[in-house]
Length: 222
Image (cartoon, rainbow, N blue to C red):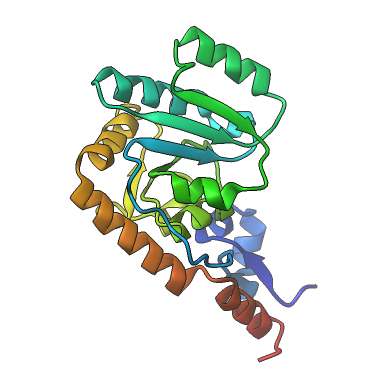
């Protein structure tokens, strides 16, 4: 009985129920999430400083991120990972970090109220999720000028484009995550290019004002 069905990404729509796509396709629209665009952004002076932001939940696939850090570090490259977010898996993930001998380079920060500052201080955003919609955390990382290495799920590929502002990696290609991290760490010219591209993309496509305008239009207010 509704007039419009709003999907935050095309992937969400494609994965919706068959009856929705068959009988209500004309009602479905895509309105991507929007964020406040900050004025501060990463200056690239902390090569190898990687950050993840998200709840400590199995869907975020943190173990793959830890494996990627271990493989990147094994090359002799100075990399570190800050994991922002709380959840039931904190003790289990800390045990995994201990077993992998990564205490010196992976830190679980828990829930924080200074995420914007942490993003600006970082160098690369990492997302190894098994599933995503249109990630607010990823949008905020882009607006902070962080090139991203993300899994090829959900709306991630709508935000991150290979050879433009980061790397989209297939989950079954585990080595693509550390190799992408290393490319950004070691090729600072490439890092700068992607950083500029991702900030510009976020400003043009991911602002809360643009999102609000699209919702206003959907409701017939414009």
